[in-house]
Length: 240
Length: 240
Image (cartoon, rainbow over all chains, first blue to last red; front, top):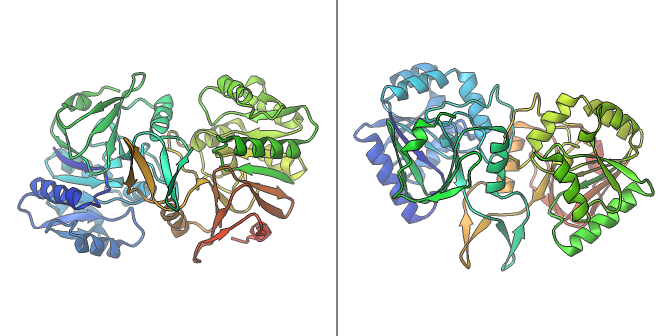
C-alpha cells in the first residue's frame, strides 16, 4: 500500500516544489492519474486550475466526472488522487457513487493513492476530523479507511488572529486542539494534526512525516509534537 | 417571540458588560433560567463556569441535565438559554431528548430564548452553518428553526493568521466567506455572518444587530456588510 496524504496550503514556492517532487516520486512514470474533484462544485474548473497552478506535476489528471461509469474508471486507473474542498460534499459523493469499497481494495492491492486536505480526510476511518462546514449530510461519516488513524489537515496550534487594518485581532473560537479534544470525548481513533505544507507518506506499515511538523493526539494522553525525524509507524498498528 | 442570539467570544470586559446588560434586559425580573449545556461534555462544570465568569448575569441557571424529565423542565421554565460548545453534539442531544418541538412552540408563545454560539446555530432552520468538528452524527442537521435564516457565529473576514513566536503566519485554509459560498452552492437560506461580541435581537418580526457588525450572504448575490444602524427585518420574511 502506498499513500501520499497532504495537509493542503501548498501556496508558497517552497511548498509547491516539495509537492511536485513528492507527487512525482509517488506516481512514478505513469502518464494518467484519475482525479476525483467531488469536494468542489465545479469539477471541470477544478481540473483546469490544477493544471494552471502546476499542481498536476506533469501528469494528465483525468476527472472522474468525465467518465460514464465511475466504478470502471477506478477499476482501470493506474493512480488515484482525491483533491480538497468540502469534505461533507466529497464524502456524500463517495458514498453515493459506490466507489468507496473499490478504492479501498485497489489501494490495498498497490494502487498509489494521493489525497490533499479533504482527500486526506477521507483516507481515514471517518471524515470526522474535517474542518469543513456541513453543507450536506452524507449517508454516513464513514470514509475510505486506508489508515487506522485520523488526520486533521490544515492543523495549527493556538488561537487564530484576524487582520483588521494593520492590526491582528485575536479570535476567540475554539482552537484546533479544543476541537480535537472534543473529538476524543466521543471517539477513540488517534489524530495526527498535520501542519499546512506537510505530508504523511505511508508505505505498507511505514509512516513518514515530510515537509512539516505534526502534533499527535492520543485519547487520554497529552498531545505531543513530532518532527520528520520521528517514526510514526506505531499509528498503523493502532487497535482503537 | 423574543430571541437574543449571541455570536460568542464574550471575552473582553466591554463585551461581557454588553452581554450582561442585554441578557438582563432580555430575561427581565424572572429568577431562574433553564440552561442547556449539552454542547459541552461536562454539564455540571459548564454551569459552574458560567457563574464564575459572571455569564449568568445574576440569574440562577438551572442545568437541564439535573432534571429527571427534560420535557417537563422545558414546559415549566420561564426563560431558556442554550450555551455554546460543539453544535453536532448539541443537535444530537436536542433530537434524542425530544425537546425540540416543545422549545419551538413555547418560544412562539413568548418564552424568551437566548443562545450563544452553538445555541445560536440551533435557533436556525439547520445547524449547517456551524464551524464545529463533526464529532458525532446527529439524526438530522435540522435545528429548532426559530428564525427562517442561518447565522454563522464567530464570523470573521478574510484569511486567518497563526502566531509563530512574534510573527503572524498566514493560514491557507478556506476563509469563512469561502465556506458560506459553498453552503450556498447546496442550500438556499440567507446567512448572517455575526462577528464575535455581537447579538441579533429578535422581537416578533423585528431583527436588530447589537454590539458588532455583520455580513449578509444571500444566495446568488454579493455579500454585503451591515451595521447596528441597518434594519434586518427583511430576513424574517425570507421565503427561501
